[in-house]
Length: 103
Image 1: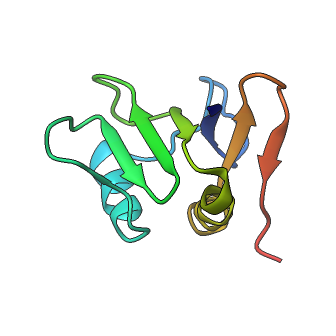
Image 2 (image 1 turned 90 degrees about the vertical axis):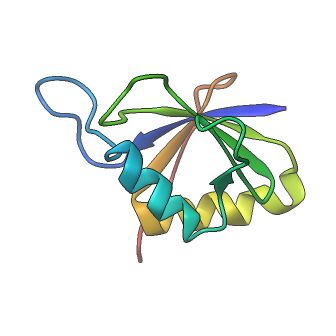
């Protein structure tokens, strides 16, 4: 299973990584992209072809871990998240960065 770190596409600030947003904002934004918690675990969100782990007790959230469970559908979801939410993704195994521009 491919693993990606989800980061803000915004430039890092002097205190480290730029935040993705508050936990509540992230959950609300991802809900609009058909990605939700399943009810039993509030820190794991499930979407088409992906699972996203929120770090415990981190608010605002500066990074998340995404597991790609179905590569056939996940890439369209990942691209939409990247463009809509201005996020970038770093493959844990290769260090490759995926970033999507609005153009």
